[in-house]
Image (tube, rainbow over all chains, first blue to last red; front, side):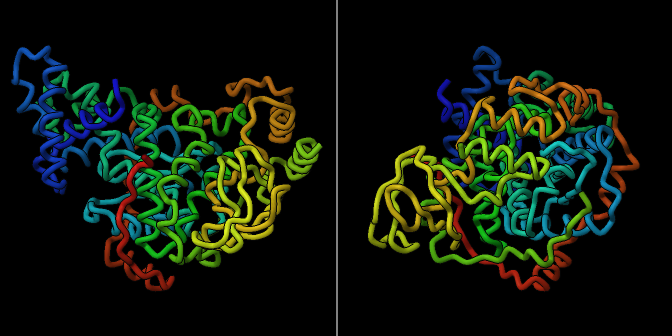
Amino acid sequence: MNTIIKFLLAAGLALGCGTASSLDLGEELKKAVKEGVQQQIEATTGGSSRSALPGLGSTSQEDEIAIGRQIAGNLLGASALVKDARLQKYVNNVGRWVASQSERPDLPWHFGVIESNDVNAFAAPGGYIFLTRGLYRLLRNEAELAGVLGHEIGHVIRQHHLKILQQSRLVDLGGKLLAKQVGGSDKVQQLIGSGAEVVARSLDKNAEFEADRIAVVLATRSGYDAFALPEVLQQIGHFAKDDGSVALLFKTHPHPDDRLEKLGGSMSDRFDGIKGQTLATRFYRIKP
Amino acid sequence: MKLIRLGFMLGALMAIPAHAAETGTALKADAIKAEPFNDARTVATLAAGDKVEIVKKNGGWLQVKSAKGKGWVRMLSVRKGEARKGTGYAAGLLGMASGRAGTGKVVATTGIRGLNEEELKSAQFNATELQLAESYATGKPEAQKFAAQGKLVARKFDYLSAPE
């Protein structure tokens, strides 16, 4: 399927499910998206019925957060937090500032660094974001941290993972369970599959490129150097493809070279003359 | 030769990424400008794969020397270090340097355990860690204060569209 159509369909699903949330889309997009929902429903139900629609209308922001919370708890079951309270607080300070420049500033954003020497970062719906110690160690300043968190914030605000869940599970289940079960973690767990596997799934390549574009813009809006995320991508690109610490990252993301190239095409001259801070001195460093 | 030198250097640094090595490779064709501005005079044009030596950085621009000329090129048009390689000689050396002995044919799953899909799939909900994570949350006003301390000023900037 044409990727643009696929994207529209995904966006359509999200809007259908997000009527109770604070999504703010332009009228034109809304229209396109409505059509997308209809197509998707027809594709899912073989065009025979519209009965999936009420189910689709039920992922409220509350539910989105409940899903994300469950995934975050599972992820932390696989990898605990780095036991450094100052580090965790610092990452939340930077992350919340960057997220405040997005169109979803009022989500209950949470950020954390987890114990793993892998180089990776994860986003779960509703604003739960984690990066590994291995990735944090690569960073050289606060702007680079802001860039990395901005990419994950991009996934959250565009509901990339939620859409995957909606496509694979909610549509099948009619979404009914979810609406009523904010507190019931067993029911939520049923919907997200096993453990935290959803964060290990590959998103559409275009979702990754989109998150990169969002990251440099949010960093700029926050007063940081826009070119900090590209610097991190440069560094990640230095890892050999067969280095185990980047295995999952490389499997689930386009190669950093491709991300740089795409980002270059979008950024073009838009950032000329825009200065931002890197804040290398304030950056909280952890022991290797 | 450069490849080998880079490999050895990385080996010596125990797999610290090569940001110390100030060479680069053009990711795509792009102009070398006399100054770090879009409308500056074009000195030469780099082709994808051209090697450059990176002199310094200025915003989104890198000052480079290349066989084709000297000047400024957009940072995102240049890949620092060697261009992407498969499992070549340098990759093998990198593998060795990071503790995975290999000849460039090392499989990612040997030895080192990371956060792989299996672990994520079988992960069990950890309420204690989650509550700890949530205890570090920063509120919007607090984030604002934190930004002010770093002299970060919020500014408007539109989202970017996808290239073509």
